[in-house]
Image (cartoon, rainbow, N blue to C red; front, side, top):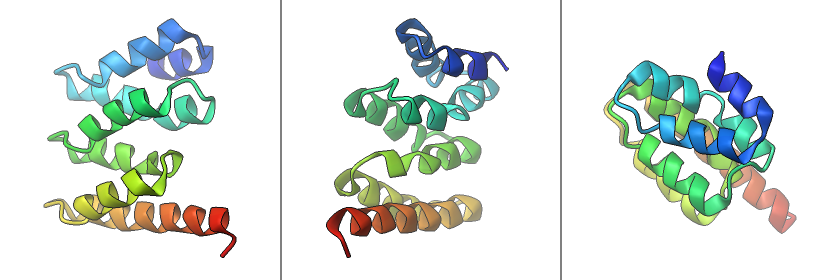
Length: 118
């Protein structure tokens, strides 16, 4: 609930707070923050560079649910970084992460083709 409220605030301090929570030792806190990343990205609250730092760390998190949340926001990045990240996640030991990685790659590829007019 608190993470959703911070995301809805769309204030720089709130965004900084959310980004820092993704690095906390508590998996539930990290998951709560990661679960609102789509809102944060859709609202333009994180720059691509800063956002990629958050997402790339989450893609390596020991908790599969956090890796999945990170995969859900790959569509907000350009295909040059998102597709290799999804390809790497397709080798994940967790089957659900692999499934989500395939879906993320398909989303990113579809968006890339739309941008190219194909």
